[in-house]
Length: 444
Ligand code: NAD
Image 1 (cartoon, rainbow, N blue to C red):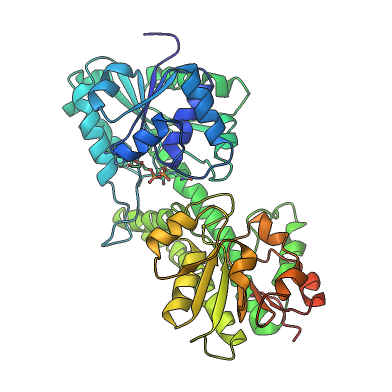
Image 2 (image 1 turned 30 degrees about the vertical axis):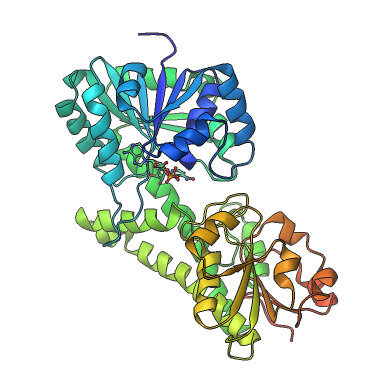
């Protein structure tokens, strides 16, 4: 066995492509594997198929080093790799709130027949607790090397938009293992990361699986908590923005993830908390995390309430009104539109008869593909032209930097809903805008 293991990364989406590229830059020989030939062709030719700051430059560097290649062949992966990272998607099932494990099962089933020597397979995807133990048995039964093939779990915590930094220097690494050998293999596979004194928690498989969903549940709870306070503020005329700031001075609470607004979305938090609640019910401990359904409910209500606010500013009816929707991605610095609150709001307003014009700095192509019924502009100002209401839905910095007077000059009526509490209300009001944000008192 070489001192520095050769790595494969199976599934080269947001997580897998980032992991493969960063590991090659850190000095490993890496083979990226995906069933999507288009994605593999793009990555092989130096194109990152999604928006992630800093990643295109690192892909170029990794390809030039000769240490990174991509393939669709599992036979090639089996022959090449000492450690195989499984990074395929685990979306919500179409027919329930459970996680769809089809892709994880398929990846393991495709790889196993090519594992004919002592090998470590490492799950990184977010899965319901108990999945790893099942996959370990599946691997042993399908691999020619049998018991020589071990499974470990190494949940991933990277944030889109900060994916490179989070991979190169994560807050912590979690290794779920069942043997000393697996731990040592994982330590070797993360040697340059661990050399920066990144803390590592070594534990069993089920704890490692749970750390990820527990972390996401906590973050979702913090967001929905402050949004629940926003609902109460709305009923009383209190200001949730001031409330959040005052809470944040308490070090036990902290200010991060305590920003009121349109709530969370994306390919992780919503489906992860639903899958966790579902799995807990299967395990007979549904009551313990039943509050997650409430967290989900609060979060969904933010989208509905934002729509209500736009309707209110349109005097009760959006039909025929022109709405400028600023933002489509589920968060800034990403082109990911999976379960994006912004597009949810835009599409709902369109269904209500509004003429919705969307602009997003990175997610236009993805948005157009999924919502061809919406109109798209070439800039924020272009979207705002003749608008009856402007609604800020994703807090990109370039939207924070909009000059209120310049935008006032192109709209039909200067009314703005700040869905993300990203703007300074006084600046907008000073330029003649009616500024509204959920949970903040209306001054008009
Ligand atoms: P993604 O949809 O961007 O990527 C998944 C990739 O897997 C796709 O390229 C797909 O073609 C490929 N794939 C599907 N079936 C395959 C198979 N049988 N063999 C090989 N490749 C296959 O998803 P993602 O956002 O990268 O998420 C992947 C996993 O990581 C999920 O479990 C997610 O919850 C978790 N995760 C994601 C993030 C994030 O920020 N995106 C962060 C932490 C954890």
